[in-house]
Image (cartoon, rainbow, N blue to C red; front, side, top):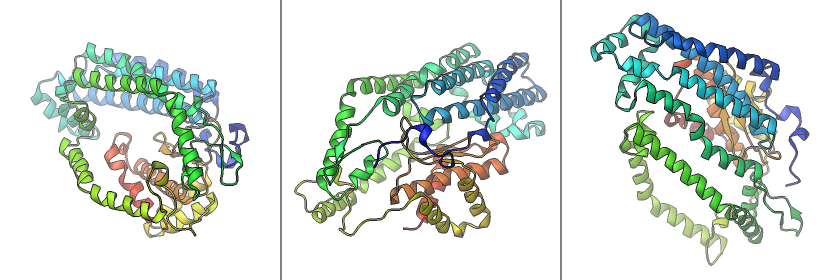
Length: 427
C-alpha cells in the first residue's frame, strides 16, 4: 500500500499495447480525417433504399463507418482511462465522440426509410439471398418498428447523442480524476495512502479499527460531493425517461431490455428469486457477526476474514499461473489464446494516479481485446483477472469466427463466460 505511481512510472510490460490499434497519434489523425470524408457517402443512398442491391450497399458502408469509428473511439478512450486527468486524451475522447455523433446522424435515415416500405416488401427483403448476411439486422429493424421515429426525428436524436452521455462522463471525472481520499493509519500506526484500488484491501484487514477508518474516509469523501452526485444521477434518470417516452416504451426498464429482446419477466424473476433467497443471506450475516465476535455488524465488517490464520498474498505472476492452471479443462486452443493475452500486453495491470477504477474488457473488432485491471496481490484480484479474461476471450473467439455484425453479443450473454472462468479458477 505504498504511494500510488504516476502513469509515467509504470513499467511498459505492465501496460497495454495500444500500438496494435494505431501505431501512433499521426495514424489515428489520418484515420479520423478519412472517416470524416467517408461519412458523406451515406447521403448518396438516402431515398434509394427500395431494393436489395442498395440496402446491401448501405449496410456495407455502415459497417465500414462503424468499424472505423469504433477503433478511433476505443483507442482514445483506453488512453483516457490510463490517466483520466490527462487533458490530451480528454480532448481526444471528445473529438472521437463528436465524430461518432456525426456518423450516427449521417446514417440515421436508414432504419426509418427501410421501415417505410410495405410490410410484404420488407418480408421479401428479409428472405432475399442477396441480403443473407443482414437477415438478422432486417428482422431486428422490423421488430423495433413501433419505437422508430421519422427520418427528421431520428436525425435530431442522433445529434443529441453527446448530450445524453454527459451524466456518466461527469460522474466519471469526479470519481476517477478529481476525487482524492485522505491518508489513514494502518494497524501499525503508519500513515498510508487510501485509493479506490486499495480500499478493499483495507476492508479485508483483520484490525477492525483500520477497516472502520478506511470505510469512513471513503464515504466521508463521497458525502462531500453528495449534491453534485445526486444532480448527476437525476440528470441520468431524466435522460432515460426522455428516451423511453420519445420512443414510446411503457417504461425505462422495458426500453433497457428491448434492445436485447429480453422479456420483462426474465428481469423481474431474477429480482423475485433474490428476494426469496434473502433469508439465507440474513443467516450468513448472523453467522459472520458471531464468528467476528462483534455486537453490531457494519458494512466495514463484510470483507473481514473469518479465521485468524487467513493470509493469502498472490502476486500478478502467480495469479496468471493459477488462472491458466484452472482453465486447462477448456483445451489447448483456449490456453494458447489466454497466454497470448498475457504475453502480448492485452492487459493494463496496476493502479496509477488518475487511472479509471475497477476492471473491464473492451476492444475493437479486427484487433485483440484489451483488459483494464487495478491489480492488488490478493485472491480477489486473481478472480478479477480470470473474470475479465473470460470477457476478453469471448470477444476474441467471437471476432475470429464471425463477421462484424454477427460477432456482437448482448450484455445478458456477456456475463456467462466470465462467470464460468471465475468458477474454474483455483479456489
